Structures are given as structure tokens and as C-alpha cells.
Image: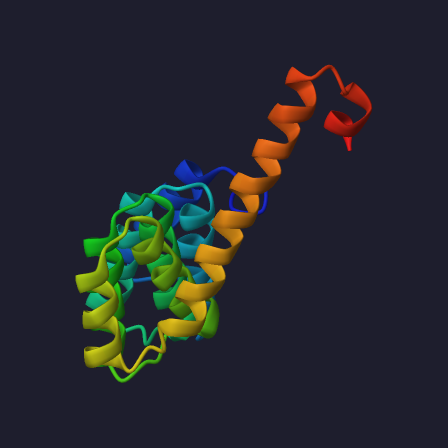
Length: 165
């Protein structure tokens, strides 16, 4: 209930107490942990997400691609490419393949940060196809700059009708 209401701190305390008391959730531990990790990641609280991952693995809960991918995406949202790569490595070392969203997200971050060595590492270590995503990010960036330039130009010339479009 606390998690559904968006109260991450309360969910954190409740589940921590359940683990301390060795309470089980009828085999639903992985789903509960996934929910907490996803919620923490979605609000940018990588610390809570990582702590729950560790708690779950400490008690033997098997976590899937969704959890690893949420952690990768949360690290990318924090603009911490090294941490995102570390989670990518941990996933593949555990025999789990991060989903396509996480793969694209981490490549997009590397492109935006202009980190060619990260792109190379992702390609070599994990076979992540970086060219297509990198090209798309660069095209999107160029289009956004061109659009921004058109709006600024229209506003400078007093053409508010075109600036609004």
C-alpha cells in the first residue's frame, strides 16, 4: 500500500522489517523488490534502488532483466555513465540481458556525454549496437538545435505567429 501511494520511505521501512523478521511474501519477493527498485529508480533515488537490489540478492531473491534495466536507466538519469555501465556488467555477469530500453538509454547517454570510449566498451563487452542509436541521438540533437534556432529567429524578427508554432 505504501508503495502504491508513492511513499517510498514507508515501503522501505516495511520491507526492511519484514526481511529482519524473516517474513516471506509467498514467493512474491522478486515482484515486490522489482516494484520498489522501479519506484525508486523512477524518482531518481538510485541509492534506495541499489540498497533494495542488495537486500534482495542477500536473501537469495532472483532478480530479472526489469530490475537490472531499471537500475541502468536510473544511473543514466543521474548522468552517471560509469555506474550505468557497472550495472550493465553486473546484469550480464549474472546471466541477465538488460532490455532494449536500457541498452538504447545507456548508448544515448554515452553519445550525449560525447564518451566515445564508453561506446566502444559497450560494443566490445556487450555487443551493444551503438551506431544506430548514436546516429538517432545526433540527428535528434541537430533537429532540436535547428528548431530552436528557427523559433529564436522568428521571435527576434517579431514573427510571433511562427514562433508559437
